[in-house]
Image (cartoon, rainbow, N blue to C red; front, side, top):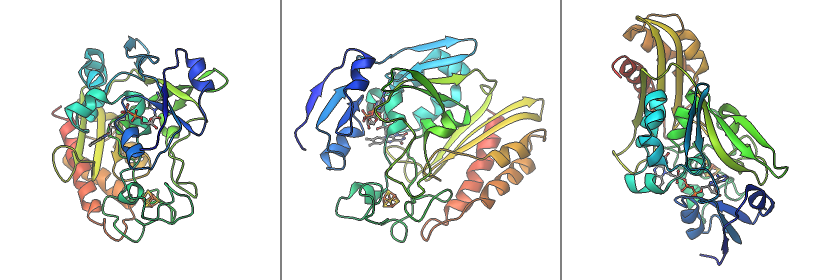
Length: 325
Ligand SMILES: Cc1cc2nc3c(=O)[nH]c(=O)nc-3n(C[C@H](O)[C@H](O)[C@H](O)COP(=O)(O)OP(=O)(O)OC[C@H]3O[C@@H](n4cnc5c(N)ncnc54)[C@H](O)[C@@H]3O)c2cc1C
Ligand code: SF4
């Protein structure tokens, strides 16, 4: 690992003014340290934000504010999150392992980098790691890669489970930038598609720090499901995942939310299928039609055609599971 300095800013103002291209914030370190050990990220300095940022969950009638330094395991067991936003708790618990969740912060989870094997192997071409070097995965090992929203420059997927639930629930990311002003970035605009700049994962303004995540109050806390399909039951990233939530009047669907991980460079909302579900009866036939709408969007790569039937099944099962949550 390359030598670096480590310091602890004591104010947000110090943190954002001390940040530049060669400086990284470090929270739990569960992703950043791996990237540094593999020479993928080589900062000159780390700013430790573990005691700077909020590690509390604040509940209010309008919704919930989760501090960026709340550990993933703390969020998953928080009573306000479990009662009002159980989809979030469920998604967190589908990720990583208990030890990693104990270290991982909510803010850091949003910024974890892709698990594309070419990104982690510095002998391989990868436009995300080294712009202009090519995309090894596009015509190579792309079993885990995207099936929607990708470009010729990058076919990677976003690895987070938490983010899929946050996307489904229309969360916002609260950030403070160099001008010291706090702004809210809607979750749908936070992560990016690769386009011709796959090196950029998200739209976090230069030098900005995430201070919290807001989730608006909702009525998706009774009928919800997070389904993650993976190669093994722990320590594995999603082949496909589905966050589903319904608001029901009897068996009639008033509102639906449907999002997936393991399919795109960002958490992916299935807006057309959500619209289709609205007003329909919550039956197996309806769920199957919604899944058909989803898979119309899918364009598999050379090695991941299996994701098409997998996703169709996962969506049907997740929607069905909403009825028994
Ligand atoms: C073996 C393994 C398995 C895993 N499996 C899963 C899984 O199945 N599902 C899943 O969702 N995740 C999984 N993860 C990823 C894990 O959840 C993330 O590594 C973790 O959430 C990152 O949080 P952190 O606090 O450790 O971030 P760090 O590693 O400290 O930071 C990550 C990035 O975020 C930046 N950063 C951190 N906090 C802030 C902030 N407040 N503002 C601005 N920038 C910030 C850092 O500079 C860095 O670039 C796994 C990780 C490992 C090691
Ligand atoms: S898919 Fe993206 S991360 Fe993977 S090799 Fe291609 S450019 Fe790199």
